[in-house]
Image (cartoon, rainbow, N blue to C red):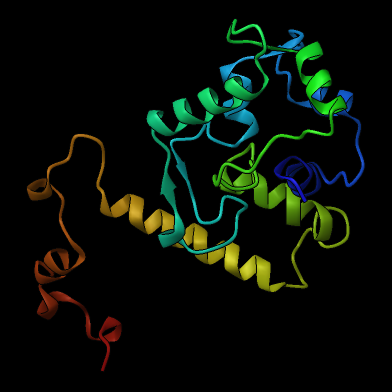
Length: 194
């Protein structure tokens, strides 16, 4: 299976599609061509960081930062394959000619190309399928729900450990420091742990 087919199946839930459909779905703004932004979005590289596996699942330590260098390499590679006239645009005709030869967008090792953040992806790929209409109060908890909540929690903890913007390590109070400031003898007995 090509990356393009994998992307369409996983991200758009389409096992069958035409090259025209693929083009139209990824031509942001219906310009009639793919530009660098379209390619970056197509491969899911528009975010600063991919949290977990990018689909709302996985563990926070699987997260990866995405830098401009990676984006530039992906765009350059794709343009070299499809931009026949080197005008930094892949026109609809250029893509359809490429597809007519049996070619598809290739796997560049950057994942399936999730377009949204990890919360949006979870909602699209799990919540909408299992909870939105049938179980909005989540009475039936799936392992994916637990995994997503753990990922959410780990991500929030990591972000909070980084501290607020502009904070220095010396200006952020840790839990241990905060606890050491509590005068335990001033806590009423009924609230103390025995």
